[in-house]
Image (cartoon, rainbow, N blue to C red; front, side):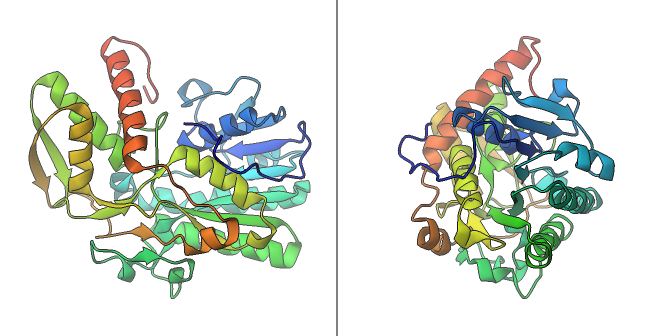
Length: 348
């Protein structure tokens, strides 16, 4: 998947201006570091709490630092001399993690508060915050036939407990640092980003990766069944990672989006049952389905309304879900085979 079909982004950056990406040892952060390296930027600082051997990807030429950004001193070190700061650091995962570890999710507020203050003190030109669709009012997400969520639907506030409230409050920090202190901030609400080089086992994986792994496991073991959380009627939209990294770049460098939250997601809604069917078709398999009504399943339906991003940027995420799932399945199948052969894979 490339960027040839996307409009070049206008940035007032020199090739050697320092770009800092936090959460860079994770899925989206690592992809963003690689994206900027491919754009020709040579002064990249990648920061993550995980020890370096546990990073999902390390981009040649990027300076990689293992720092716990919930510590004020580490946040200051991370953004020293930065021109732009991209905050993708958070303690989070799929719905199983979000529902069972709300305190850990809430503690990410320490990262956000320390990092934005450090960026302001360091004189950074721009600051990006990765928010989430979990910040939206949950009363609007009780029907699988979900209408798209508009940016204004975050208020009156009734975010998902833990993770959603942490994101919503951090958005407010971004807006106030712009209004009161003049730090240019940009905010994107991610809608279920997926793709290769992401978490695919261990409890933090999201639905697309989990379904790929489960189908691969079923074929490998000969046990042709699959467990689905809930009744499978829950609906979501999923945004491919290449669209996400390009979207971050466009949002960060748009003067009309300073301190203005905006959706970054696809409008292609699909049920979990249909997502399983898609993965079965990609794999050439047919599995018996077992439903666990007591498992974490999140809201009944959630989709992105892309009216605003189309209006402001003249662009929206457009990679078809099937195309992204084929890429994701192929990568996870390779990872699965490598792990079975005793090779090290991400998160081992």
